Image 1 (tube, rainbow, N blue to C red):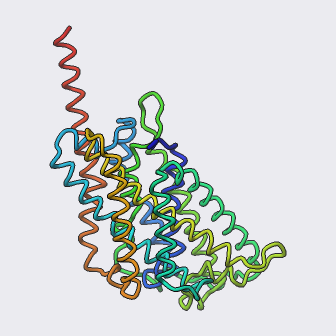
Image 2 (image 1 turned 120 degrees about the horizontal axis):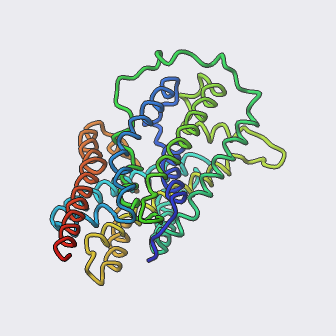
Image 3 (image 1 turned 180 degrees about the vertical axis):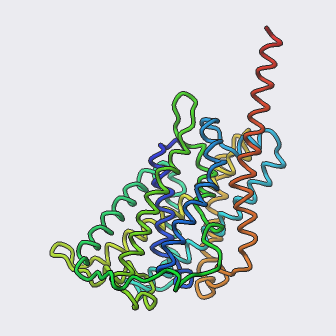
Length: 367
């Protein structure tokens, strides 16, 4: 499997993952109000700091993945990191499955059964997993651009309905709970895919993907929250999916069913996120079995098996989705996020540093 992608494609993959959560998040987790402006700004700043260790590692270690470096040095530690990441990815996949099913059955396709949607999503995801990361990476930036154009179109068509009088102080909706930082999926995906980016002169380019996707997602999320509050106003908290609600009564001469475009784009982004999650599982297995000729086959089988488990879990958890959002899970997500975003790159950087020193020492001894 050819796994090299560009930094723009990686930025597109991360952006699609973030914007799918933004547009198709479960209603129980939505909080489109004035305090969200503060939350988005604070979370983006904290995310950048959390990305920093991986960005530094990426800039200095070229095309070398962190998990591969750790596994080559110590298999046990590598497997520990690998299992932790796969468990976190499995949660991401199940939640994405549930979000996609709930979105489809509560918007334009409410007549479809959950079982039918599960089968369709499973088939599409299985095809994408076996095609590999490049096919997904080519489509992701296009999906993000289409979403951006769609948001601009809806904003222009609804401009006359906007009223700044609907804006008020964010203190009214101030929440003392945690931001969405600890459940951020893009950190986990970036930790695995940073070793896939094509580089020049042995200098890493993956960190540039973070600097590209974070501002784009921040601006799009802030603008969505702005139009939701200025157009829907007090009706905002009664809507399941504000962007779908806006597009459903938006009329243009060329596009009479804007809600259909919204559903199509969100479904594509959900499938892309699901596929990239299991492609990351393939990469993890390949890294853990780096000297095994059957590593590629093992990765494909593992990813396909976990996809079946995800489909079954998503189908049965759709009616019990509050389990996936339980606050009791936050401490586990916090530990996993810090382990992957901070401890893992520091460990890989230390191994590379010692390896470089040993190579220099060996060269000097030979001379």
